[in-house]
Length: 347
Image (cartoon, rainbow, N blue to C red):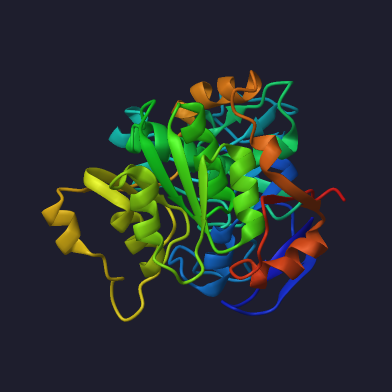
């Protein structure tokens, strides 16, 4: 199969032939029709994810396609089924998986991190009966591929972790794929959303996704501007970027007893990143981590996508081939893109 490959953290990224994967016991091989280009893929390439320990490595963890091969013991899936999957795949056996919380499974696998991912023509997935999700006929491959990390992560962060309610005010820091998804989900729940980004094009995309206000992070006092717009701070803040500065902006945006959800990865530099814990304590703020979404929670989200209450397809910016994906990976952190990019390995 053709796949995007790198042989060292931060090293050259190329497209080359690799052996086809074999369906593991309990798992499947999926023929990839669409796979997202996500900032988490850049973190993996840069060496920020400790799960990547062997090379050559194939990135990619957001995907949709058809089942190409089925391993021993799989009950629910057959060759030809259209499927997607969360990027966190649970083992299917532990107490967390049995409770529907596969996103915190201690024995989880993650395509593109713990093993070869979906920037390829084929990808192996484990514990298929726990992790695969059927794609409805009226949801396209490119739409389904964008759900697995960014949109599903934002959906769970907004609905399950922050529990955003109609009439609440929400600050979303970062208007990339996760941030735009969070804006759309929060607005659909009746919240009033303030989106913050350093890119005017991203802010325009946030307005189209449902943001009531947008703020350009241009070195001014963003927190003060949020407090002015929200009459003293928002109920919820979500950091969709993952830096000490954006985390602090989210926490600073909150009113007393507000809820901060950390979604963007915070790679440690000289230890753990600083968090303004004095403010957290004084204002009794809730700090919530959010790590993907298990397949068990997909039906509610997929129903809203199918009936067009949520329109992740509106966030799609571009569809590229494997060669273009390989070229884009090293610059994903710094490239301004007003929406999601998806790769179709069949191109």
